[in-house]
Image (tube, rainbow, N blue to C red):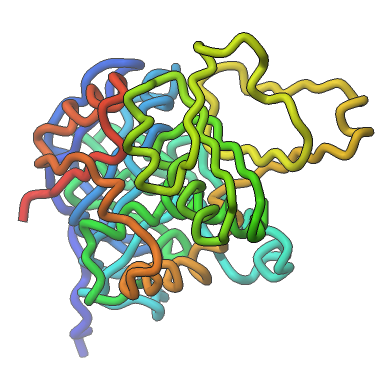
Amino acid sequence: MSSSIKQPNVITCKAAVAWGAGEALVMQEVEVSPPHPQEIRIKVVTTSLCRSDLSALDSHAIFPRIFGHEASGIVESIGEGVTEFQEGDHVLTVFTGECKTCRQCKSGKSNICQVLGLERRGVMHSDQGTRFSINGKPVYHYCAVSSFSEYTVVHTGCAVKVSSAAPLEKICLLSCGLAAGLGAAWNVADISKGSTVVIFGLGTVGLSVAQGARIRGASQIIGVDTNPEKCDKAKDFGITEFINPNDCNEPIQQGWGLTVTLGVPKVKPEVSAHYGLFLSGRTLKGSLFGGWKPKSDLPSLVEMYMNKEIQIDEFITHNLPFEEINKAFELMREGKCLRCVIHMPK
């Protein structure tokens, strides 16, 4: 007896492909393979541009490549063994997954999955292969998501099912930057009422930290940035004072307390400090994705947005069609946007 289960086929669709460091993305047709076991293929609805996409594009990474990781979409097909998702489900993609079975996922002390952690080699976690190709030649992934394509394939552990009532064109920001900032304030720094908070860099992530600090009741939230045009906008998210270090004669970072690192450095990833600084009680903490376990925690952030407890809409400064994706990169390079949301053709 023949099976009645519909087997997904290869899809040909448009993607914005990067062919070299710092070069404009090229809109062209790619083939997208059917999902492998424990994978799903997603029709991308919206994807927003994150600073790390730009940083990775400008680096000497592996090419050709499809960037993009902050996205929302609808499940188009499912691979063998998938029970958590079905066709038509609304999802967010995540650049760091959660298998829920490894030691670190089960520990309650770490959000760095040992199975589906940050993927840096441009391939899928499961078989070290790609799901994109052009004329039979592989096109590499970014963070095992690659959302600058009309369709993409991700592991089930790198997708989060969300309510169909939530607007996909808004909540896509929660799949990276906005959630990372809130988590840095709440999970990592654990800001308390009456605290003084200083935020270096007032992009989407920094302003999301400000929003988290304001919600926690911080009494003073100081924003530090070299772009004076960010001053007025920053106040909408809770910044109480703005400092441009170019206007100051003394180092801005003088003081004591807890320092939390987040985001991707543009240059010089090494960190050095004199041991005497730590003897005086200072603390330095790192974070990835604000400490959130993505599949476990993101649905609650979506619910908070739906209940108007957190801001998302105000971070979206531009809405652009997919064919204008290079304009989004230009706006980010020039510091003229927070988040550009890219809308795929319907």
